[in-house]
Amino acid sequence: RSPGPGTVLISMRNAQVDDMAFAAFFESFAQRMGDFAGRTVHVDVSGNSLSDVGVQALLRRIENMSVWGKSLEVLDISRNHLLSPAALDPLIDLVALERFPRLACLRLGGIELSDAFAQDLFHTLASVEMGPLQELDLSYTGLGKYGHHGP
Image (cartoon, helix red, strand yellow):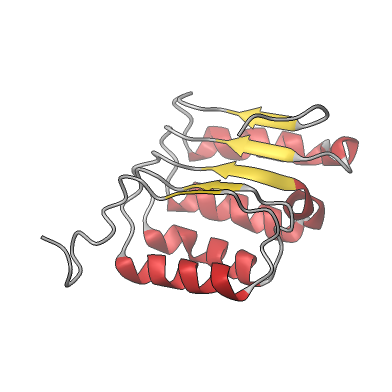
């Protein structure tokens, strides 16, 4: 999904970012978030070395700053291989609370996910007003691999 005019694009794709660098960047960005009020936000931190701690910190920040959730249009945390489904549980909670009214794209590809996580995510997406969700990337997550329908 390409950013439109007036979109704030935060892209650290494949930048070898770890939790500490990520936290420092978002701390400085959060101080300027008021400058971006009313604009959509795309966050792409795919292909890095973020762990459960780093992603949970991001999700807490989104939860605590309602302008982030209201503005978030794209969230790409794919290919952060250190993540576990446990780190993404707060994401399901935020979706359930309808904190992402503009979310159009959620990318979780390349993260090993459990079938139980996927079921919770799908159930939550089906039960809330998600707005314009157009893309949900769950590629290369191992879904179904260990379930009763897997190999």
